[in-house]
Length: 219
Image 1 (cartoon, rainbow, N blue to C red):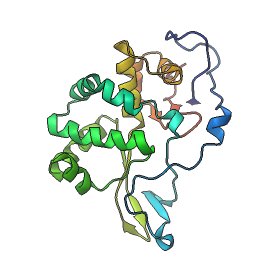
Image 2 (image 1 turned 90 degrees about the vertical axis):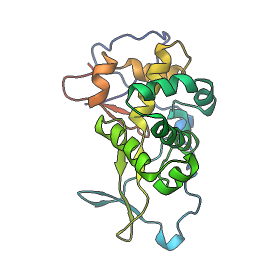
Image 3 (image 1 turned 45 degrees about the horizontal axis):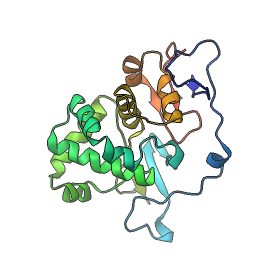
């Protein structure tokens, strides 16, 4: 069941009832221009057909519009301590958190995250093993999805889907009294029992219907 959020005057979290709510994108969201990529060196025009290996090679587009990224760079720096605390709760150690912070920065700027692991390791002064350990921990709980990317059947850097992690961080900030914006608040309030339902939810903020719950969940 694919569902989203609904515009409402109240900002309090109320469990959804009756017909699943529907969120209609604003005109600005329908006409958002293409977002810049996280690549320093874009692929050449002859080598820009990107594929993601999921059973068969099917071109899969991914990119979260700026209005749906929930976290802003201002929030990221202002509430850095709370974001760090939530990452600690998710089991990440100091160096592992540094790697995830760098991925979150890319997400906030571009809405797409596909750097080379070696680049992240160099920029955060950690080993690639530490980087992959951090990714492995978040993948294990379903907070991050890793998609293998290919060009002409040759593997290139992975794409890291951080949507669920971002929603979890937004919820944690809201619980601690921080303003996360009406769209984000409506989205996280859609869950009847957030911290029990979030683990099984499929979240893709690039879609106008960004949340998909298992049958019997979410209302």
